[in-house]
Amino acid sequence: MNPAHRTTRIGRRQALTWMTGVATTLVTPLSVFAQPRSWSEMTAAARGQTVYFNAWAGSDQTNAYLQWVASEVQRAYGIKLEHVKITDTADVVKRVRAEKGAGRGPRQGTVDLVWINGENFAAMKADDLLLAPWAEQLPNFAKVDTVGKPTTLNDFSVSTDGLESPWGMAQFTFFADSRRLPEPPQSMNELLVLARQQRGRITYPRPPDFTGTTFLKQALIETVVDRAVLGKPPVAADFERVTAPLWRLLDELHPHLWRNGRQFPQSPAAIRQMVADGELLLGMTFNPNEAANEIAARRLPATISSWQFAGGTIGNTHFVAIPYNARAPEAAQVVANFLLSARAQARKADITVWGDPTVLDLARLSPEERTEFPTQALPGQVTAPAPTLPEPHATWVDPLEREWIRRYGR
Image (cartoon, rainbow, N blue to C red; front, side):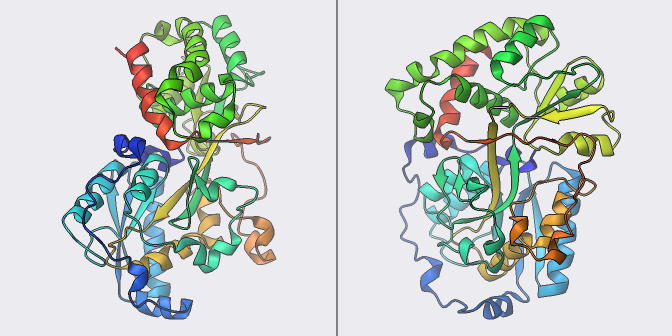
């Protein structure tokens, strides 16, 4: 998981309507206030500031990594980084929206940096809750792979416009014990064939779990007649027509799933454990390195292999963003720049630390910086990465989940 993907549960109705909810107060953008004119001035202004980084805290590895980041930015820049541990980024969106509604302007907020992507970003951008464009001015942004990894500039089909800085990559990935499944399926149709052959040994997490919803979106992309329509907000009149092939596929698939498709595990972690126990044939994740992480931690056998469908699977980027009213915007930018450093990205990509894929283009790094990154694939890692398919527009999530629950979730 890519762990950030567990942070994408938000107030979706705001994103669906693309209207500002509470924001009636005129707020002067921070960009019109006196700001550092050079990066050296930025780091000087950041010294002594405290950054309240609101980030999902459901992983010991992630939490430990952020503790390391905190020690590094304190040592190098004199910045105190406080990890505000959250379970749902939607709560952060609501808090910043409420602060704007209460008239709390620049430097009067409670959030300095937030781990974010998808619907949460769409909602904050729509409601003007983010600091004026800053991310692409970071010195280390020049090392980001914006060509090979276009989702570093496009968050669930919503342009980032410099309002958030990329932090890590993710792509929908399957894993299975190669002894039990030597020829894994390479598409949703092949998965359906396998489910018929191995009745009761395949399932997916119950939406609105993020991985479960991603399974729906992967199936939607593979069944839709015109993929281009998914890059725009869904039109109510077309939703039924566009998604009809998806529901036909699921109607065929569900009777062959675990517990006949009448019950679904609550999380990918539950499925992972059932794979480890041999109850299920395959699991799924949004972190291509998750199986390798689990093998390294001895929670999965070394015979587990990971793969992505030959025609591609959904991929995205997770980011950090700064609210419009951050108390320490200079320090927040310095922290975001550090998160893009080769050293920080290489440590995050280390299987023994986190295993979160980098957003950087290694060809843009110095030879010394490139040596920071692992060069050999470890057991469980994807050995033949597939094409990355863009996420449908963020506003597809809510109607997909509501319709799934109406059809299968009761």
